[in-house]
Image (tube, rainbow, N blue to C red):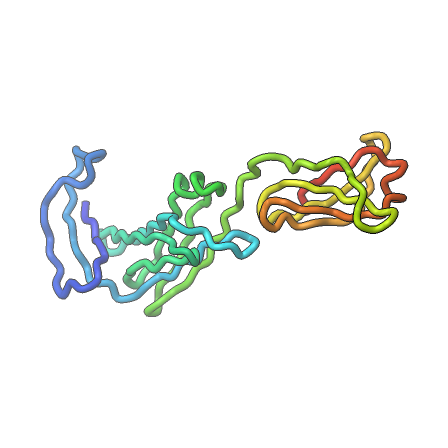
Length: 203
């Protein structure tokens, strides 16, 4: 099989017979170092716009019997630049990297590089590490108001609901767990005959 490695700064193309990766000892590849003619910009952001860093992005493209391979790592801004050549590329984030970072796996993305550069944005979703936790309502600073404190997934929005029988729930409003914590202020009259309070992820 032929494998093209895209490496900047190489003026010539060379071939060399050698074994490729220890996990494929039975396969011999023609390794071809190729000067890239373009780039693919990858932006890895979750739905809240937070960058996801240190995730390996691998690009694969086949053309004329040669398989081209390019790899990049997202930086602190969630961005990675892959060297590329014209063609239809398949991009695959490393799902083990995503899992370690607390995100769900992503399937591959197809990108057609027909100009010197192309851009793609991927949006991984966080795993829900635990259900939100609420404190008992406590008196607020103002008369006839109470405060509920809670913990949840950072950046997640939650609906606050109350019930008197654990069967029928009434939504009072929503809050954002900006740094993993949140609080909710409500008039005491709204909770006086409703003994139960819960937080649910907003849809």
